[in-house]
Length: 300
Image (tube, rainbow, N blue to C red; front, side, top):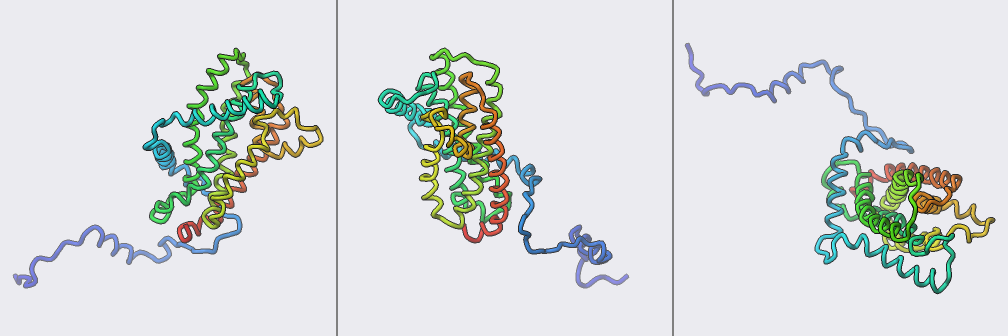
């Protein structure tokens, strides 16, 4: 028997076997990948969002920890901002200006409006700057980019839950009677979050391309505040101009919070209008985000 002078022959590995089998396979059986130009209206890929739901949780938790990292008061800032705003408004608008509050004590009237507004304003500002702040993550690994502004909004829900405990104490202090309408509160919170996600996705996508958005966003949020019935009731607005106020989705949402928490009558038409506008803004923001998403890694 002759001996192999080159030494023992190495056994073929599983990788080599797989490669050899792939070469012997019929070319028609191989998967075909077609690269096509993007369409005007791209798919939202909601299945990918569900697949990466754990990443949403971790990014949300990261945003919560970063927000209160190395702060003296920690999570107390979630309470300080709406409380001090309420005290200032109660003094200047309630006492000095004599602003009507539909028979409700002005401090709790203002706080019920400030609570969802603070969550919405902070969520829009944070989500609007979220993509630029996560540039290192965007350029290194693939995941649905919608998760980043969504996590910024979800992190704001933690502050909302903390500040809501102060509202419960105020309701007990002013002996506010809780009615069945409070069962609609979770729907109002979801509606507020959905509106923040829609606006946040749109502004975050624009902020990647136009960095002016970062400077304009706080100013626009401040203007939006005065266009929303937070420190004043909707009843003082002349009837002929209320249709214009109804175009602001936060107007119907704030009135919904007051109706649910303070036992006021629901403005069904205003709430339905706010819901419809919120859905439109969410769909528009999502499709705008997806159309611009392909350029994020190049220009962020």
